[in-house]
Length: 485
Image 1 (cartoon, rainbow, N blue to C red):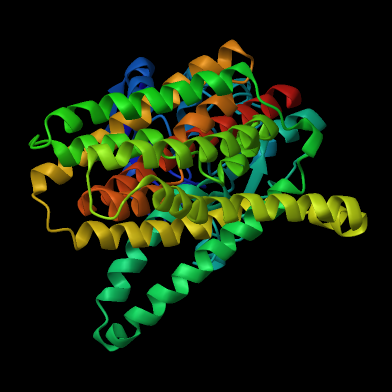
Image 2: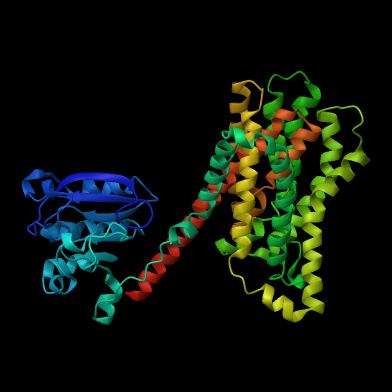
């Protein structure tokens, strides 16, 4: 049992990232200027079982944990049981604040037990005369942020080498998405910038393809052309894309006045849209096979360029849209961004080996270029949704269609890819879409409002990838902890 004052979820002040902070009762240090003097009395809290605290901690899968108060070391036995349970049940990182020094705690058996299950200790009394509001995660300059496991291993106090921008690196995708949404609303809310809207739209139309081109060039420089080949799972995924595209279109061909037309059209384009040209970047970050992913990306783009011009005129008849013009239009939209950087990377590999070696050095540059491109795409998507005149129910229907098709494609891609020992690439190949193409396809060849399906899908597949990157990072951190142990 632990005497608890309160539990705060998703706080960012008690350690890096989002954290679940356990504020306990009981402290004998009575530091002058303490922010929480009401926690000094052990009777000020509510006695709570470690099982109940653990359940509440585990309700937030993303947040790490901080023990604070009060002084957790005043109830070291209870917190040791809790920390051990957290480590058994998850890969969560644990920080602990205390007024005692690390050296003193090591001499206490109960405190030492707690130390063995936490990752970081912020130790030392709060000294009001040494208070500095600019200090990160501590109140006064005498306090230390200690890497506990490394300290126990080396048998000396090892300070944590904390990178304050690591949080931004870990959460690049959701930050990029939120930035795109916020940037649109802030920009459009400033009347003085109204006259720049046309210029900015034209600038984004040039900047985004340039970013994608540079990103793909860097990615393709790391891929050996000889390794590009078709596999059996490629054929299965192409069959899924084509067959579902046609099946969803059949009700519209035979019942053209279908009241759910825009929803079905939205689902159609979410299924047939080829793999995002940036998918190789995420696949690499997740530990997948970028070569098989690039091979599928090329196959999916070629297939889409052939199938879409055949099916769309039957689903959504429009004067002047025949096979050859539509075929050429789609080829012109997709292939330059895919083929040109690929061949340029191959030419550099063959004729400029020194430059090719330099291009392989940037480890994450392509990923961050993609994040900037994502922010621009989300901003453009936000504008499409805001300015849509379609009935709200239909917009919700399109959003649900995007969500369902996203979930199905990631699941099927992983399942089929897994059967051929390529689970990550299979999931990315079928699940991550070129949503800029989706938006263009809906606006150009189908009911214009269906273009927002691309925006909703963009949000869905980037949320999925953000979660997957989070899980990979947590697995890596857990492996490092096990190596240290």
